[in-house]
Length: 151
Image 1 (tube, rainbow, N blue to C red):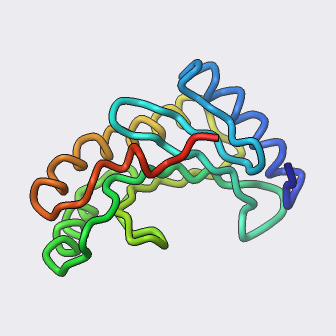
Image 2: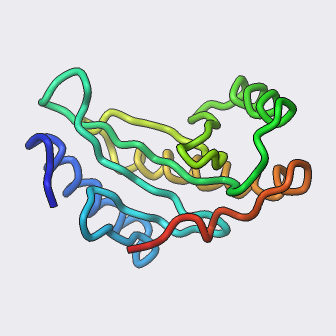
């Protein structure tokens, strides 16, 4: 596995260990990339450790879940997601490169606590679980659990 900075590698190793301690076998490490997947309920949450764009001495932890795949992107759905973002404490809805509806939260990778990481993963996964059925019922698409291939 290649890392852009030493800080990214250190943060990845810490994050991987903490996720295993917090979520046990539900935390699965990607073989080629600094990603850890956490399966929980009807969602798979991806935890990516990335180099911080502002310096080489820290990293960021991006926690993301695909909420709904193959949904038609229409104005009504976009308005709904933007209004929901206004009330979110942790994270925001968005679209990925495949136009899947995602929910994402990012934390600074150093220093952070295991409780902060746990809160981020739980906030993202529970939000994905809360909204997947509602979005599918109203705008179509399919559950995204099949969209996140585990390594």
